[in-house]
Length: 249
Image (tube, rainbow, N blue to C red; front, top):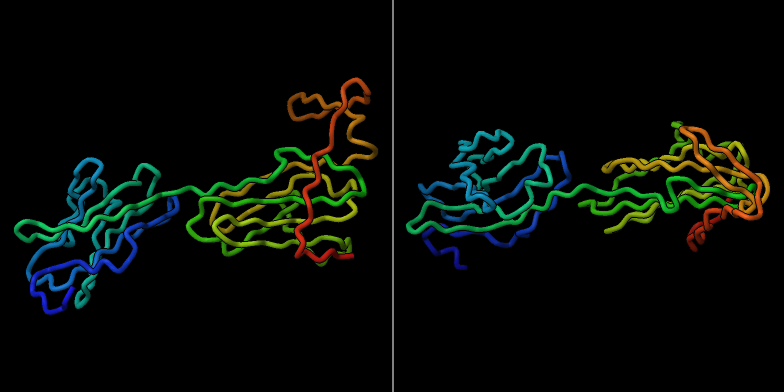
């Protein structure tokens, strides 16, 4: 649209879709050209609820606030501590006659962290452990993923050796923790902790002998193993090692 147009209009070059994390402040930005003395309001479509007029909040839900800096054309709806129920359409309106509006969609997502094969994994002594952590539904890849063993951050340069990690970032982020030549002390709780998502824990059992000769019965927090041929207990299937991971010695 020509900038010579004298009435208010919306700059629609920015995306109409905004994704935010549960609990992390969300911002929906509306840029209005040639506003003049008109007023900008924000309306929630779900219940046709007037949220803000100008810089004033018109809802009892004080999580919503309109932000505007003088000398700018931006009117931003701030949503603090957003929840999944806040997802939906929001409209930026200008008080022309008749009013004009620009709709935006807010998606509030909660990233899901999973460890393949959890919550318990059974590994034969001497085999390679491949713990694969997957992070989905994150607006952006986690800046970092930390692995811990029994609540202590893993040291990849420890004298034990044979421990490596690689993280592939994208719409779905995957982090591989490789531990070669598994030993009894490698048993325990392993936690994948993405910096922008909830952690996930798996319990690894490194077993002496063959897994299919064991049968597990749980009693509270205790695990009882019985040797039996009639009730084979299979190992957790070993996942393939990513091709771009260089094995350490």
